Length: 559
Image 1: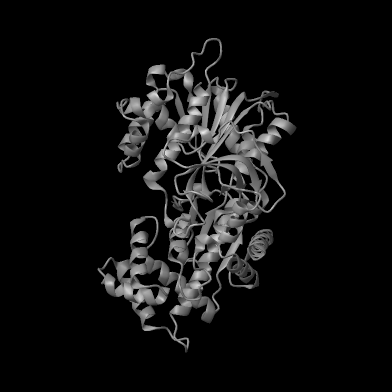
Image 2: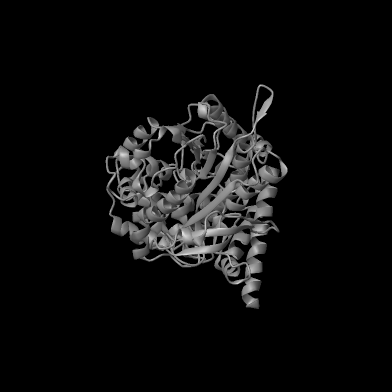
């Protein structure tokens, strides 16, 4: 037990060193990944050994699942770039440069030339730390590829020379003998033929990620150039980015646009129910059965059909129907990358709702609620956006408080007991690495979700600094110690910090009796090998918990 706790403490210290180093380098304005500062980050990452990066400490075996995970979140072609420049929103959206947007971590990226990539960071410090962690891991794996491509005399192996020819053929669109190519690749990646074949297929199936041949070659090439030709790689931060981070610049723009819309449409004084979730589940629950003329089909089954609709025609039909019946969609222009939907329930007739929601309460003298759905925030961005949203709307020299009736958070989280797709109901949020903890009066309880074929866990949730920085030692400590945590996520403590500030300190006009509902579904179990985020998304297995939580929220909101 003492040894386990010591290892957890070592891991915790490694995370702190990593974050201190990243913050220092951010303030300094840049660094070389294989310079003294970069090596300090690499050493901290090696001590930590995050689960999501698998075999990062193995000197020869390249971590293939981890690479696929980060390349789904980094801009296409970044493996070719020696210079990576992190910027705020600085006008490139109005330039001739074509934006590259990674679908798994939506941010605008711009390939300036063959060697330089600009990446917009508009979601706060969590986003910056997240991408720096991914880049640090990428450079570690690049060094392995370089090492595997050389013999004991530091000469390039034949397999590397053959890979170069394969990449040239691939660029010209010519056919290659994949079985032979996989054999070469297995030497350079330090993995078996079978492992390389499976990894290649994963990379090949994602159109937003370059091929495994291409990525392996360019990672190894840039590493070789730095080692022998002293052509360094660099990561820099723009002065505008360093100036804006931490000042709610984008959150204020985002919230101001939303409150102006509510004012212009006469919705500002109506009871407002805030939901943080994906943008499809609430819309589908309210509008899909009627839009698709499938009111007799159970909502979960209908949702599975919609999620499997490859050409998205069903989704287009649902959205068109919703836009005619009280839904307004506000796409983000502020830079937060958080789109929102506003639903005027006064325009939804009782006969339009699915049977699972029952018959809504008659309005009588009370105004019908407005449902505000915001897409997922990222880490610290949750505080920035909700804090700005809960402030009164200022117009004509007057302040108009929002009439917030409830705040509902549905999130994806890593579970510490149970499996993917199970549900967690938090009783508190504990902010990792700090003395901050937030007990909550959750309107949801374990019993609200039981009896539906899913396991449900109730207890504290750990709000972590980054999902890619967790290892089994830390997680086992949170699970087995007196904390008794049931899961980990990145936004809960930040949301609660904003809520408590608005209701207890800022006097924003939001009453202390605002109803809070938190529920999470498990996207992964980082304590089980092969069940981390790097192993892939939930897919249709996420439909049941997503819609169960969404229905419970709407039942309470609609009465």
